[in-house]
Image 1: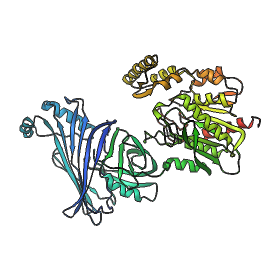
Image 2 (image 1 turned 45 degrees about the horizontal axis):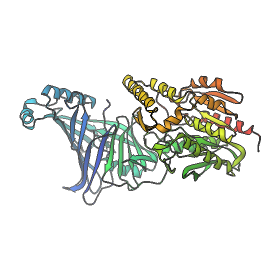
Image 3 (image 1 turned 135 degrees about the vertical axis):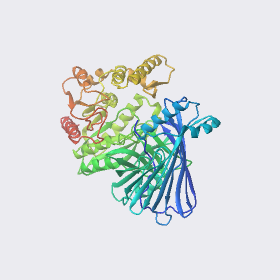
Image 4 (image 1 turned 60 degrees about the vertical axis):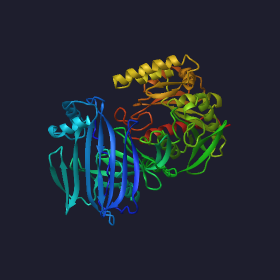
Length: 592
């Protein structure tokens, strides 16, 4: 288990936070489960601006009788109220086990935890604690306390109890950011620096109090993106704290500069602001997406709302520079609840915007496109949890007809571009509207039942794999009961009426029945739909349809050098290859 080192973030010189006492609270979650809270206050006290808090958190611990120990943390950060100059940081940590474990087990449990936290100490003097342990019917696993303060040009560390009075001095950097375990509220200070950044990044010197060390880091401004907050998504300003090129922590601010959310993406640790209503930002693409899109050249975009039955669908029309009309495609995404840019609003930690990048690449190659929010996502109406494939196909058909009627779209040169299971939707629409061409990325060539078994079989963890097989068997049984609406598969709820429709799809027959130019392109390193699906599909195709491998990329056309890891940047060569195929295929169709 990596050391979780989210927390106090202070620059050496900061604007003073003046005014009356300010109080607030974060709820703390571990892997989605509420495990505690942090209450903080900011006040002027004895000539100091003091930021202090109380953290209570349940730490999973296998050796403890109740399988957890309780963490109590009391940090305090003092600055000069007039200048913002750093004066002192102090902390006190207590680990308690209320489960009547004996002393040996308690020490083992605490040692295990502290080893994970990059520290191994002689935990406590047992005799000194024995009377209190018996009276309180608990084991106090010890308190590690310490403080840090500048002395001239030196940054002085003191640490007591666990370490029996360690001290250390380091040269005082011009600018420091303190990082301590499990405390989140001092990101309030770092927020001031984040909002004042004039460029995309800012160098940091990170101070780790309990490790008594300094590390180099960077503060990165990632732009405004969607973040989950208490059952909804808000547009918040996103910043990352990087250490040795890895994301140590991510945090999100609202328009008032208040810290709303802090996340350790590797540990599943989340701090969500409580008793506060954020003021969200207007929409803005993440910085990485903006950089990739801008590198693709100039283009025009128009946000539109398009009727589809009883709802409207939010979409974006992207047009190349110059005079039209242009060849154009409707971009049909995978069946996940994605927004028009290719992001899952419920997961703010993956914001590559690959669909937006692909739209920009198409425009750079002279192809217009229309991409859209899935039902119930973003600006689209409907219920994201109860959407049927037939409804998705109806939406796609309405959007295709809208695009076809636009003056910017060249007559007879409007096609479809799909990804993943969106290929089944696109193929169904193509059978009705006869588009100029279809380019299907990672088209699943196996029925859903076999596809899900295949995906479960690639899971690395044997226990998780067996659990998923059991859940899949339960899903198959539930499908036989028409009144059943919900089941669980791979830890998520699935809407059985939608699964029933997909269960009946014959992907080979669906693709083989099309009589238009088709490209079925398979990412060589795809983990969602593996490349061998090309061999499964090829015998079902006919003249004018082809399969092709897309080398070096994963499911979302991003560089995928190792299993499970992608760069987040769409491969320009691959996207250009897809765009060129579409232009050529649509140019061969006789104009109406």
